[in-house]
Length: 352
Image (cartoon, rainbow, N blue to C red):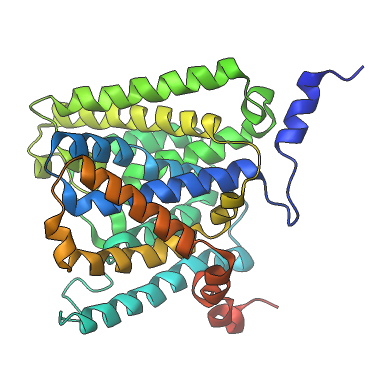
């Protein structure tokens, strides 16, 4: 006899037309909303309320995105066809950099700064990092304990001054989250009933874990050694005025907190499809377009007029909703498809 517990997981992950699963579209939509919200708060920091919310959001939103990316990554041998697919990200990055050149020209800034292409423009570092992680995965997957080695590298690279060139520091530091997503799916998490259709008790535990992890960030912020730079993953310990012991301890703690919050969010994410779930199909579109919009808004008098505090949180949340809904719809996604899926630029290199 078939029981309810065996039915629920199948219902929870039943793909929508086109093969998309609500859980992952919902998770992506929530995460891109947090990304836009966090960037909207960037220039409004200064009050305790804004600084705390900013730190909690930055503690896990990018690690969670990389976890989801790793979940769907393939560790097959990197042949010519797979390499071309991964190279989409590289082409998208270069095209987006050209857009930032135009934006700098329009605002009267030098269009080609000295770090042009060496240090990706603002949010574009994520594309370079994701490209490198996908490129490395087939080789890392052959190692005995790639996740453990990645964590060691994350903690150890802080002893060096790797820098932001080609997003090197962030790629090394955030690699554990990408590998964690790939590793957990390979270990059957995508078939675990408690994950596919979490009970009320499991969701309550996830909510409690999220709250505890957020509280841990608040407690860390009260420590003398704390710096928000720990959430950006781009500096060595010396560059954050930390000694080796402090740096390893704090980065290790943030690593654990980010992993807990990532898994908690995925458990809490709805398993049913809503009207806003379609945003999950266009997160790259939102990611590419929201940066220039926020950058232009920062240059308006409104940016200086908003005091840091609850009003800033409200306005940043409203801005995030407007941008996510406005940029994450099917129409904008189709219009920007030559940028987000630049197959036209790779067609001549495609293997026969």
